[in-house]
Amino acid sequence: MSLVTRVLMGLFVLIGSFIAPGVSYSATHTVSPGESLYTISRDYGIALNSLMVANKIQSSLIYSGQQLYVPEKSSGRGTSYTVKAGDTLYLIGIQFGVNYKAIMSTNGLYDATIYPGLTLTIPVVTSASSGEKSTNVSRGGNFQRPSAEVVNLLAKLITAEAEGEPYEGKVAVGAVVLNRVANANFPKSIQAVIYQYGDGTYQFEPVQNGRINMPASNDSINAAKDALNGWDPTNGAIYFFANYVKSKWLWSRPLSKIIGKHVFTY
Image (cartoon, rainbow, N blue to C red):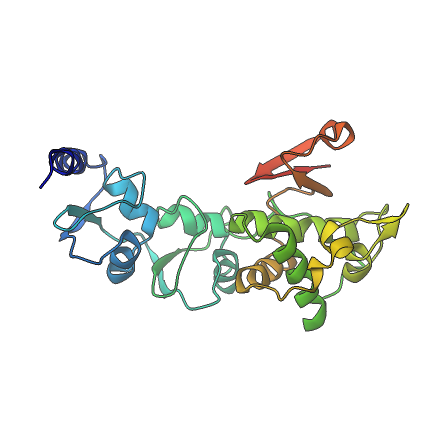
């Protein structure tokens, strides 16, 4: 074993010895060859970021023989739910009538990443945890549930615009389209907003360059459904652009939020 390897292993042991305060642990796990933080968290039915926080790990780098503290699952009152393929926190919240942020808080989640096999505790519904009044934007009385073809079109735009972005950023792109549908200054349907043309150019670059014709990714399909179900991470934004764009006009718009490499504005 080289000196560098011994030093790194010593550092990992030292880091692992300082566990997060105020957290209860159900087990200590010894890392086996071939294991990753993802597979360990999946096997114990806990959130990946909960495992990282419990051990004060800030990257996915672990090594064989390392000791990890496994946090207990939430013991609060509520229903136990096992995540299935295609689930998102927002859709689970809709199913149980609970704000997705309440589910995140109850389960110690620091982002919306979930995966099949993860066991979640669904908190008891209260007036504070139900609904999405603080983050949703009314789509207006003329907004109707779109067909599967239109959902797929929205998902294809999300794929073309935000494939490399975090899931919240994908939902945000879908939300911008829906916010335009509800805005008097834009067309009144999802298709018309996506294909809007004026002054020799399309509103969305993927329509201009043909990337809109790429198949939609599974994440983008779920993101389109979450946006249609009312999740709007942008709180009503009607524009977005890449953070490297130099347009003074775009940067002069009132800022809503920056998610990943996209800037969302009003």
